[in-house]
Each structure stands twice: as C-alpha cells, then as structure tokens.
Length: 121
Image (cartoon, rainbow, N blue to C red; front, side):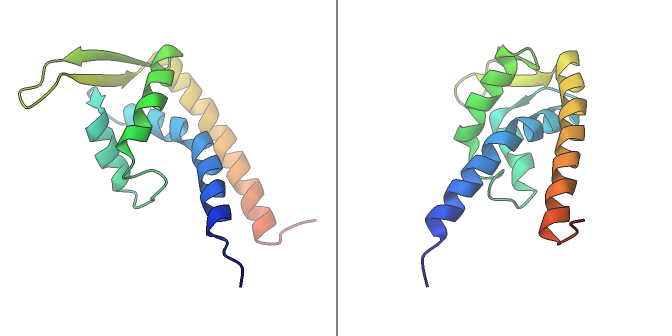
C-alpha cells in the first residue's frame, strides 16, 4: 500500500493555513483580558487538535499579521520570569471579521460535510 503520510501532511498544512487566523481571533474574542502567545497556545491545546495545539512558534507570525491588519492589537509588558511578553487583544474590526469569517467557515464546513456524506443532489 502506498504511503499517504506526505499527502496528509500537505493537506493538513493547507487546511491549517486558512483556519488559524479564525481560531486565533475566536480565542482572543472569548478572553476578557489580553493574552500572550503561550496562553493562547495552551487554550488551543485543549482542543486536542494537532493542527491547532502544540505549535506555539507557528502562532506568532499569524498574530503579527492579525495585528498589522488591525484585527488585533498588541502591547509589550515586562515579565517577572523571563523576557517581556507581547499581549494580544481583538479589536472592534477583528470582531467584525470574526463574525464574517465564522459565517463563511460554517457555510464551507456544511458544504464539505454534505459532499463527504454523499448528500449530493
């Protein structure tokens, strides 16, 4: 039997690329206070999904992009134990984007599920 692992890894990478921003905005939206990268990664690990948890370093470029796009804002605070930490908070624009992206995600998810389950007309 052929090894499909390289194909699976490529598929997971492509799938992850489009969903990480959505998930990060959702985590920020559900927090009453700004979060730094490690806190965000820990919350994502609770999902049990290897695409989302356990890759803290992969989150930072996405967080920077969200910040540069005005969907999140950040600030740096000194840390008692180690280097300063950059904290992120969702913006009003980010909440609007999250709402739109969530609708788009659900439509896409429902369409894909329909095809995968054989519910074609």
